[in-house]
Image (cartoon, rainbow, N blue to C red; front, side, top):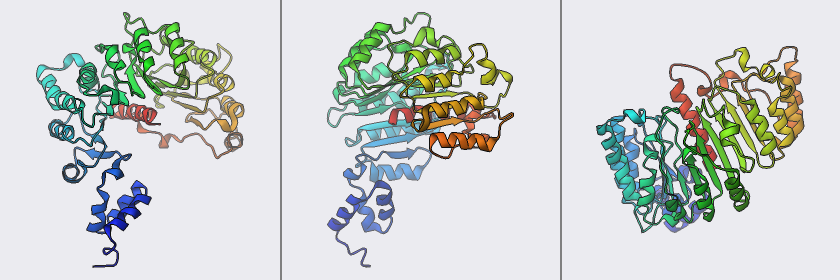
Length: 446
């Protein structure tokens, strides 16, 4: 036995207590005795354990070692893979029997299995047997109840949101619930019916994500009893029968939730993007983050509207489309000629809280990019663009000017360094879903 192996376990545990999770995992690989010290519940309190269903060795390790100590798990799987779905059924029943597991997140980039109207009875039964039934068992626990449920933006699962809320054994213990989804067909999908009284029972809920179609004056009024600090709203299509949310309802909501983060995310919303300032945005909406993702249209009027009416709360804006289409219609200079000003520049001038601007898929005028940097200076923590028309400009001088204003090295993002979703290839849609999913998860966790 070496001297390292001879260290008493009590002393080893004291040492492990001082290490961060990465260092602790590295130390546990020293020998079997050190590894045995790793599997303590306190080391997994704030450390979600990731499981890839494709990895049988990882599944076995979870069942043998981790299932009795982990508090939160993230399960990654392929929603189109039959073998993965069968494994998910067994895994979820295992999770439901582990009282120590109180948080569950799904991670899959195939969020839309098929269009909802095309789901056959056999597929519906598979979804219910492999996901819904074990999830309801997990949620129904009264001893060590669920605190976090993230359905991974999977459309087919979010339609069971009402069933999951009804199944909660102790709804007052739930702290995070994500029911927002990424739609297979943003122009045609059923709308989730929401019983607001069930949400009202979730007295400890701090983070909530919903599709815009479920929002109403009644829902906003109901959730004012909750200790919410973050509300994420995903917009897809616009239902002609949906009344939306009134100015008064948002005013009451904003008065009650001082400092709340309201994140509005438009996902492939080809119709909704054109109606944004008329049907969705409200003057009293305490909007902090806006994401326009692959909507294939630059709504200048909506940007101008937000810079005027949401100037006191807006902190971050993403306007993202594919960079593969470099036609004249994507040049901001041409699009803004009729109004005589760039709305992003106006945002940096009017929005005192603005910290982040990300624009891809549109060709920026370098004068305006410099203007944004000058107006916000070092308060602009992130300024990210990829397409800049450098005609007649000294590129090095352009970069140096913005770097000076921001107080750090800056340059446009090289097209080769962009996320694959921002280009165009045979697997564009799958990569696009991945980009949207990752951004939504990032907004929920920050």
